[in-house]
Image 1: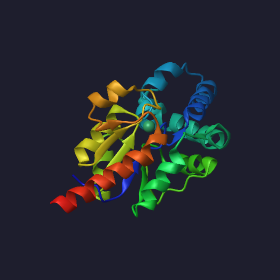
Image 2 (image 1 turned 90 degrees about the vertical axis):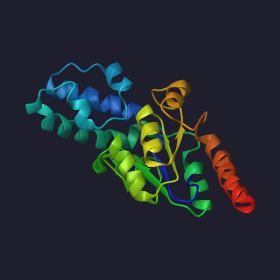
Image 3 (image 1 turned 120 degrees about the horizontal axis):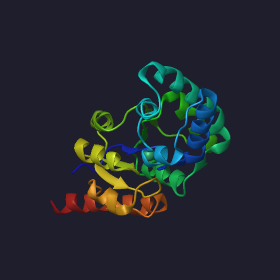
Length: 212
Ligand SMILES: [Mg+2]
């Protein structure tokens, strides 16, 4: 079990509440392109790539235009519709205080990541953008990540498959039971619990080192 190494964080609904911006952007896309989009259905799939969500609502020929429309609206809306989730800044600080790097690993496109981070003043050490599912696992392997924190079952699977410790937070569309079933080693109530959990993990490792 790796304990030393970077800590990966998902972005949407793990570090930031981007739901209002995402919903408002889809509403704009629906109006601009004249297509009915069920926002509750979008919400249930939150966390996947934009290109994959677009495919539920548009024929192949319209995918590129729909994604372009979404990102144009999202980049504008993110500035005013994004908030920090409780404990997010402290969680990144706890990782840095331990001498490790805090890396955002997200399905979001880089174009949408930067205004989202700027809106809440978060500054991770690195961003790996536009990856989801097995691509997240591959990114975590590349980083040598010790821990991956996320809000979806797919995040938990990516952490597990990469050899990182999957840590769930039920601040998105999924509850503790669903995250645990998907492989979460621990499900925190929110990121406010992360610093204490992470300190315990690090202390446990040095304990093992002394005993071993
Ligand atoms: Mg997420």
